Image 1: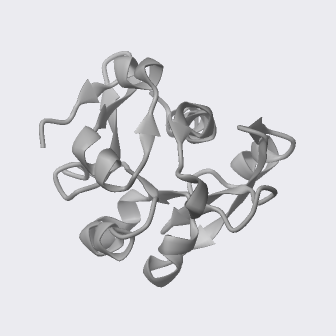
Image 2: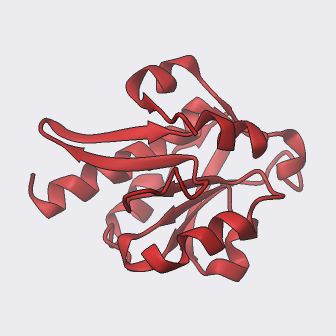
Length: 155
């Protein structure tokens, strides 16, 4: 799989996660707050994800897209931890532990480190593993439809 295609698929997954994950009401300041998608580390999506997020509505909320660091990650609803930040993945997971943040990573052992979703390259494209325990701990409800697309993390 070419790199551009890989990140197009991962970007589409990130956008679609907003439709298949439910955050607790208290993870938003108000009913009009957007779902914040943040990228930690190298941004392989360039402007394509930001453009794709415009006009998308999930659960009557718009989407916002931007960069983050470990200290700001708790302000996001979805944090994508790029492979360039592999050494910080545990710090990110720990930083958002008390918050309802969907942590998504592409480094091996991301779910073992407590992350919720780990992207994996498979023969037929991009797959994922979901750590249901980490999702529950974060107060996130992941739809059965999304769970059926992923391997279940046994952690």
